[in-house]
Image (tube, rainbow, N blue to C red; front, side):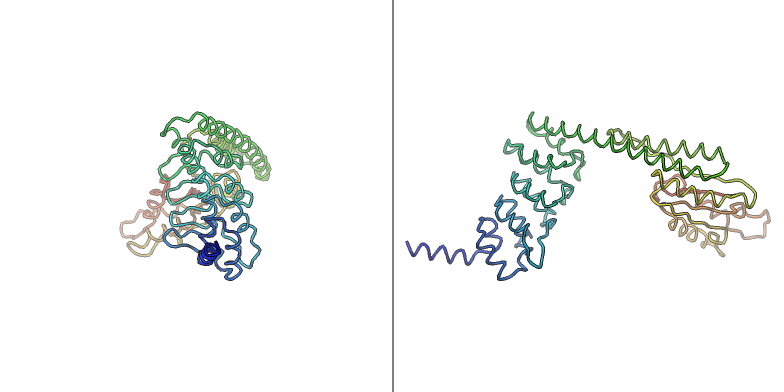
Amino acid sequence: MPGNHDQRSRSARGATIHGCAQSGDLLGLQRRLQENPSLLNARNAVMAQTPLHVAAGYNTTSIVKFLLEWKGPEKVELEAKNMYGETPLHMAAKNGCSESARLLLIHGASLEAKANNGMTPLHLAVWNALRAEDCITVSTLLDYNADCSVKDNEGMTPLSHLLEGAGNEKLQGLLCRHMEEQRKRKTIESCSEAKAKMAEFEAAISYVVGLQELKVQLHRWARGMLFDEKRRALGLSIAPRRPPHMAFLGNPGTGKTMVARVLGKLLHMVGILPTDKVTEVQRTDLVGEFVGHTGPKTRRKINEAEGGILFVDEAYRLIPMQKADDKDYGLEALEEIMSVMDSAQLNLLKFCIAK
């Protein structure tokens, strides 16, 4: 009997911190961390997993709790990824360890984290539920509002994987109910945001004096964009809108540049543009001095304005004079601008042409 006790003691002393995490040997794990605190987030061979990965995957909840509440100089890496891009929550989900999953979620583990194949913890929990015929881990993730509509690298949602496998009415019903609840919640949030944005838009546009036709057009764009947001929240597929480019005609001093600046702020406010940046250019900013210089020069300005508005002031100066002996490259700049106006190459770039 004493010999067996000595053998177990030697085995415990020789176990790695990952072995302690797997077996639930809390005393052994505490001892190793006291000796070397840097082992807290140490990676094991081959799988590159931390002790928290191992403990979560084997549902040794006492170890998971201890690691999450560790008070040492270094904090546990809650979102550490193994060689497959899986976090500790992924490990708990794919092995049906609902208690460990709940502990991780209480401490702020990300439900949106994706593995290398694009799967979230909910994807893996569904796979485990199909195999084990147990929905507890799926239910735990849904209690914390895991997104049922997120897609993996193959474009499949957790429900898509379920429909491909053997029938499981309980699991399917659970996911469908939560998808409907999430869709309703997103719709309500989208409507609230749309009302707030529209009120902000109305307040901002009230400072523009006159220009009634422009205001009507801006209202039309704003309402259309906000309605698109509501439709997307309902799960409808909405085609992207055509970029609302503009041409301003008017004598010098009539406020064309000022309106373009206000327009940038308004379009950003209602979500048409990601930024309110307005890049103002003239002929000298676009046209080069020799063959092959104008195209790249114009393209640089277009790239600089990406995400906002490119305001071309006095655009009429880009049209070459009707003289055969002149070498004017303004037309090349116009062609470069026209080539990207209706393309999706740039991120929501709008053009304002002033004449």
